[in-house]
Image 1 (spheres, each protein chain N blue to C red):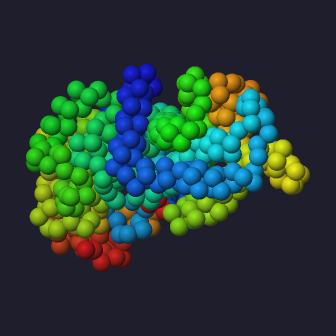
Image 2 (image 1 turned 45 degrees about the horizontal axis):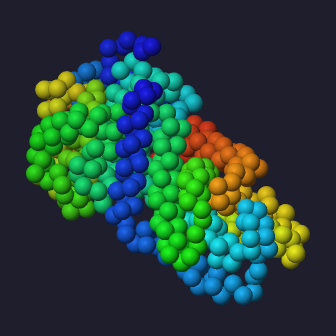
Length: 269
Length: 248
């Protein structure tokens, strides 16, 4: 694979994803409205019942909205990862996935390119959300918005890889509702996006264990620390490891001889 | 390193099964440069499976496929760089314009913006689609979409063009136009073509014919050799005899 070829192809894949995203205005609006409703309605409602003690990276007592804002950035990336997964299943059903897969580039590169394109879109959404949150008085240190960027890349790649992995196992679009019920919601609710771990522990040991092993929790913690200019090594390593595991299985799933494309059988569509 | 066969496509002892169901059995054929080969077979004959194997969407455990001397399984990038494909189902992005679709394809083949623009203009002009380059695919009719797909498949100047039932669902003039255009590409540009179809009237007397049925090649050779003549009636009769299926 020539380096120049790889760069041109990667730019092409990202550009296409952006074109598609900008054309689907309702997708852009939905991606923003969802976390904003949680922020303006859910968090505001729970503000009085949920007090957040001083826990790192926060140095003072914080409002619930401040705590949940980072979880909602995670939510944006989680839903974006699943949206990419949905669009890959759709592309496969519609045939446009074939255009990508018959390109003269290694399959792992093509899938990584697609993943990077999706992550790029999710980062745009996250910063627009943060801008709106800024005017709602949820403000992080200026440096935090810079240090958040690499964390968004890793978290986005990990959640996108999870979506890609799922897309290699889902044969039809109709099965996608199952993903919502069995992946997105459990991952989101059993995480530190909405409540800190110590709070979960007070209610249930089992939930606490599940939440602490949930890769989404670690991605959210990585983002939380990064937004306040700090580095959470454990969350970083956990998210990185989860990314490699998900990506490896996804590449295997799309391998023409070994993965699910063969196991699913049936004629090629 | 490529194996210098001098052939655009070589398929050797290729077999493929979905679980226990055999889809292709011991397929052998080759295509020389500039040759138009018609892969004739009824629905379910294994044509799309064969295309998925040649394009490396599937991998075969048995047999070998070489494109311009490059083995698809082991040198997939080099092999696919020599290949243009038009799939049975439209694979264009409906919400993007003709230009955006073609630029995307060009980037996947590593063409710079400048190279891509030149080739896109050349191919669209050849297809009579240049004036519609800014239109969204959704606004084009089936025949025009196919023309864009053929232009796209030829952008990177492949030596082998695969077409999987490209005229399905098109009206008679559109079908005729595409059949003529592809045959002229073989004649004038030395392009090799593998054209899967179940429509007898798409076969030209100068074509090479492969009759595929139930995953096996029932006959192959020049049209007159396989059918004992090159008229539509003779091809139709031979097809019926070889497959026990009434041709369309």
